[in-house]
Amino acid sequence: MSSTRRNLARLAFLAAAAAVVLLIVVAGLRASLGMLLAAVLGSAAGLAAAWWFLTHRGVQRWLAGVVVVLAPLTVTVFYARNRLLWVVILFGALWAAAVMAGRRALAEERDGPEEFETPAPRHPYLIMNPRSGGGKVERFRLAERARALGARVYVIDGPNVDVAELARQALRDGADLLGVAGGDGTQALVAGIAAEHGVPFLVISAGTRNHFALDLGLDREDPSTCLDALTDGVEVHIDLGRIGDRTFVNNASFGAYATVVQSPAYRDDKVGTTLDLLPATLAGQNGPALELRVDGLTVTGPQAVLVSNNPYATADIAGLGHRPRLDQGTLGVLAVTVRGTADAARLVSGRGRARSVLIRSVTTAVVDAGAPEVPVGVDGESIMMPTPVTCEIRPAALRVRVPRRRPGVPPALPEMDWTRLRRLALANRRSTV
Image 1 (cartoon, helix red, strand yellow):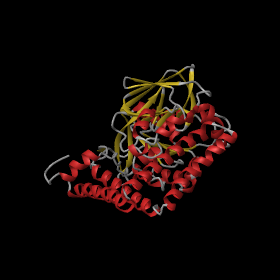
Image 2 (image 1 turned 135 degrees about the vertical axis):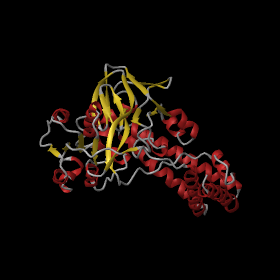
Image 3 (image 1 turned 180 degrees about the horizontal axis):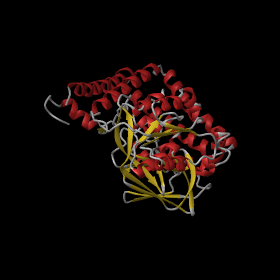
Image 4 (image 1 turned 90 degrees about the vertical axis):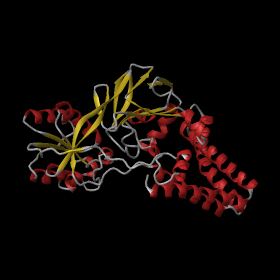
């Protein structure tokens, strides 16, 4: 155990103690309890109003929106009138410092995925979508640079190109590497074919969000650096998700999100369509009710289910950030079930979140519905799939060729565990936690 981790653990307890002492000494015990109660009530009211905003239309929605705005303002005014606002701000800063130091102390140094030295490809074949990422293929001259490195390049020139057939034909013609410069949906399609034939796959971060590239530790700002893997690269072996007969590299989503993006109006008016469809969707009136079977448990009626190729970091269970590893051989599963306004308000507490949010790491998950098929968002693409839908993990299914020098994956910070943190803070130099 390093002295840095031990010192960070002690710093976390010091900052937390300073925050508590600040409240009691400056505000007094009774006022401190009042401040905490006001914060809890304000948060609960805001969460309940947010749920009401999402599940209603018209005047009720906008009244709820007013409450969402007024709840934190009311709490702030309460603190200000009692001349305690500076105390709250300083308390928040100290507590945030305690949590950050504690999570960094609990984070253990872990090696990344094993890298394999393999010969550079002799006949690489790359498929590039010039419309992805706002035109990154042209802006970074990716096709020109790839051809200069000896790659055959196909630039998609229309809306009805069969990308899968392009990849299969390239393999029949002798390609020994497949690559994609485009969105994650196209990446997943070609990655599945590469895995099927056992050839390496090259990811070029030319999409919009580039979640897959992020979790591979690639440079998302300059996709041309991904081409370095053609001449100076290594291989990593990663897992792939399987949903029905399709491959996914990031995640598959069921419920509210999948239903909303299925609407033809979503592409032209994302916000308006979402607000229009959410009330019926969250109430279970727009689309079939879901049933999730995972890890020996059955969850009935979740509004949203997210199944990911390896779990997301604990601070980002919604799938908006990154996965620390792609080679753990597990699916990440997140299911959210909120029965009404009261459940939304209870999300302010740990017990309430435990009742409404299920998080698991498994190898198989099954999503069923009271209908012959269900909408699913697979790596951002909306499709209909026959029920029940089975999601599985395929460990080490894909050989990915990455540049030897790349930014890497940011480390994941664990959730706070005060008991473990206390042992770490009190440990001597030779002990382990």
